[in-house]
Length: 191
Image (cartoon, helix red, strand yellow):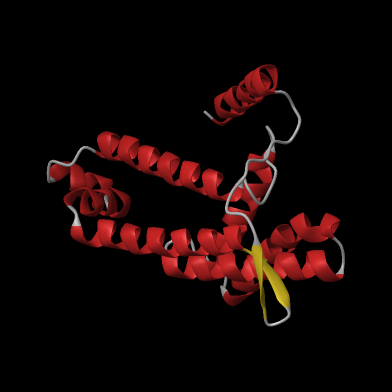
């Protein structure tokens, strides 16, 4: 399945290049910027932060207060028990895929005005997202959000003080440091 996934991804890249070309594209967003404590902040970034916070509140409410959210959580924790209770894990998997696509689309709409998007932009975004999840914890959305904010601040500091070309390396370095640090805390148990 991994090889098939790579094959489909390469085919999708080829289709994207054939239809839209290989040049980066950017769209207009919220215009203007403002001055805050010696820094110029684009209004689009404020919109991104507000929508992100609202989205996290909605997602938390969704998982804690709706049948579908609780069913998705049950399928994640114990698919067999969920199946016994009448929850179809395959349907829940499709629902999770749809929700992830919706959230990915929302993220794309918000980030396109501040960062040009090309056919291979998803790789850098996936690495940054995975690094944020590793820093914050894969099972804790609030910690992952905090990890994403921390990672974003680190990337911008590196871009501002060292150079923009090193910005993408920050996610990889942070990911390696956190994984090594967490691995050192674990003790190998004899078999």
